[in-house]
Length: 400
Ligand code: AMP
Image (cartoon, rainbow, N blue to C red; front, side, top):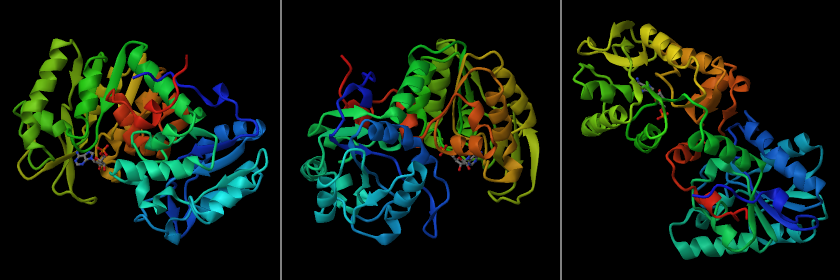
């Protein structure tokens, strides 16, 4: 797939109505935004469009309303926060493609900004029916002359406002998508070597595509988290009650054989922090990977493994990390993820953190600023690393 896409700078926007798909899917508690990172992430594109005198129409989804208006999922708090951050009023339309949105869009002056309501107030936004998707996308497009996609977090979805709208308008990417694609694309296509990937998280099945694609490119593949136990089991280790996908044992063996054939240094935990039960306050201890007793489960990588994984990062040119090394939400099982986060941050390599849990861990630990890039999209960055085509990016105009 060609990721060399036209950006906001490659199209005339002055005086034009520009529909911008943002990812304003922010966490809310009692109607208050608890983390505005996603709003802040959209500012460079919005500010550029303001400076150029575009008439800006922002849109986004927020949560999962069931295809109808629901005040709990209104973008009103986003409009307020955005106004504060920009120091300029952001007008919120009462609807998405209704009378209010259209009337407000029609009266925008150059540099004005409006936000339409949550696109998921219409079930057509995420419809499986192509015609429904197209007709809703066409209505969205009818308010504007240019489409800018800057929502990396939903770029792996072929929804009306994330991709289909590009059928009706000249479409380019914003700065956020441009940055995500550039950094992750360079890592995959021309990585500074040695290239190390660290994969963790609960299940092998969620990461098969990523492992398959990365095996072709990396020098070292580090596997931690719950998914490590399927590999350890496939190698004949006792794993007690650790999370394991029995139906993926053959696949695990195939992946390890492929890694060997490609000369990839494939690292699995040599020891583990195990617990009696899947509970935050369960009793725990460390044990070697070939000796996990019955009735115990691996909930984190052990101290020797932490040291080994950290060592494998020394001298790396590029590091990609996706997925925690253990149940890092629980203090007693967080040290594997913490040690790896620290080692990645201090590696001096080009460091890319896939979104989701590993991004959250890196932020919580205060290492986000030390990383080259913390992706804003969990699912999207995973699909990107799998080498899949992201519909929200594929739909944009190619650079000549
Ligand atoms: P993922 O969304 O696939 O990146 O998985 C993240 C989840 O994996 C987190 O909620 C962790 O609690 C969970 N996880 C990590 N290690 C383990 C483990 N050893 N056993 C069970 N769950 C785990």
